[in-house]
Length: 212
Image 1 (cartoon, one colour):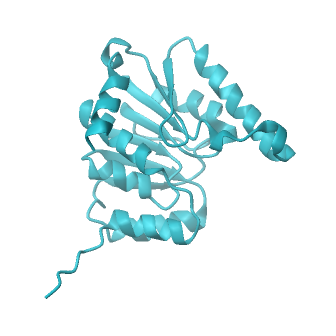
Image 2 (cartoon, rainbow, N blue to C red; image 1 turned 60 degrees about the vertical axis):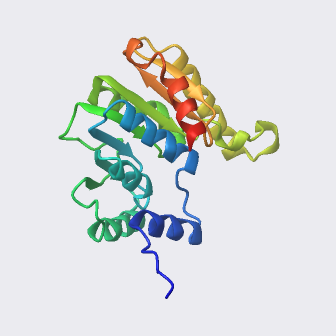
Image 3 (cartoon, rainbow, N blue to C red; image 1 turned 30 degrees about the horizontal axis):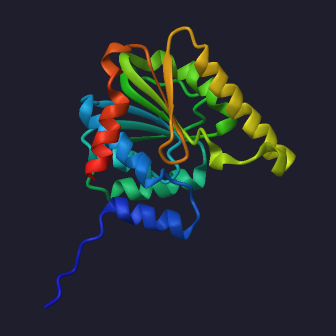
């Protein structure tokens, strides 16, 4: 008799996202998050941009507790249904609000993951850097934005690309954070204050990904 494999909540969310064309983190980004969480013993994570909770589940599956903020009512409702029936429901705290105006009660996060409106990367970073543990990481997804050519896109997309470039410049001159932009997925920026703690971070990621 053929065995049936139980579909995990994470796979269900991924299947739903693909079927409904909802953007989620790429597999390589999910792996990088897992490596960083496990390597640096990350316990508390803040996520800006829940969507339907795929990345929140990836984070929770690594043992971290995650607070995640979403302002879109439909996507929040879908995320809520997934979390209610999830084996990780006790580790995922959903917040329905606009991250730019929300007053967060929790702080001292070990990792903050920003995967929301790209036009607001600088305001998000400015606001939530104060919630980060001094030894923690700020990670922003989709830094390359599909490598689109500004000369070959319409004006709204061109304006968005300019804001992403402005964010990269913002990181490069930030007085408190050092940043690396890595080519995993659609590009990740990883920022930190404690350089000594993360001096071998890139080589750790590379060597671990090669084993998978």
